[in-house]
Length: 409
Ligand code: 5CA
Ligand code: ZN
Image (cartoon, rainbow, N blue to C red; front, side, top):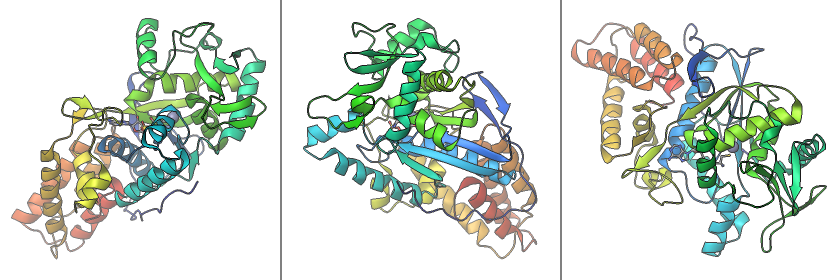
């Protein structure tokens, strides 16, 4: 499917620093070293049954910054994102609201593109739907069946978690913890006939009233984890740099993905780093489509909120922390945006070279956006109080904020 338009990334003098970022598998902040100059990133995309909420936006903001830091450090970036355009929650919502599931998915995906464009998120080079990826999923599942890493159960096909000796290394969870999370997040540990309760669906035989495709695996539709593996392998290959998403995807989604991919290719690791953004909540609960406690990006835009202020509100929180959205987040961001815009609108100001270095340093160290924002605040305050004689400073400060934080002043 088509992606969305790229906003310009202004050129900055000099070069940024190598990205160091937290990896869930090792629990450490490590330097990411792209193998051949090209940094490869896969980020789990939306399931398009509702509009983009601020939690989604926060997660995509984090991975947008990853790309900006990489580009600033001189790398090309190959970015891939999926759309889970056929899956249980989408089909259930379509039935509940009497809509055609394809119409629902297309409408919400279109709105997501608009939101991402308004927020100046860099677009993926490949934006791929689950339905589009079926031709790559089928041979992968066949391979898993042939090697004994997958088995059939009443027409469905399961991945056998015992097939991968590395299973468990992404999340580091105990089997007990896995079992309880698996049940909460769409797994079916109780189903009779499974070899292991944690075994995950690769392929679902057609259910009455549900969409299905005729393939060599039979009439059915793909499971969720294999969708992302198939798309990532098609465009990035094994051992790509970062598998990203929110921390609700650590287990089972990214654990299973790593295992499916290892069993299918014999190569380890699937991704060099697994990077996870914190959950954004509202009124004490994770913002989620199923709970309905949502603040939509598109609703804020309709109310006339400047998308740059939405983005600044997200940037004020460290990407790894879980936090609760409050009106004060937006009010603070609107006020900060006005201060920054006033500062870069002056004819001259204090030199912005140190500011550029500070923002680069902060972002390269595990995307420390609160520190980056504080550096811009200090520069803006100095511009306001003492002024300065550097006529190139407002332009450089503006380009720094635009190129590295994605906020156009
Ligand atoms: N389609 C799958 C991924 S393959 C999916 O999880 N879709 S989603 O629409 O539920 O979420 C899209 C992205 O937003 C995922 O990376 C997810 O981890 C992230 N996300 C979902 N809810 C939140 C939240 N409340 N806060 C932060 N990130 C969130
Ligand atoms: Zn995914």
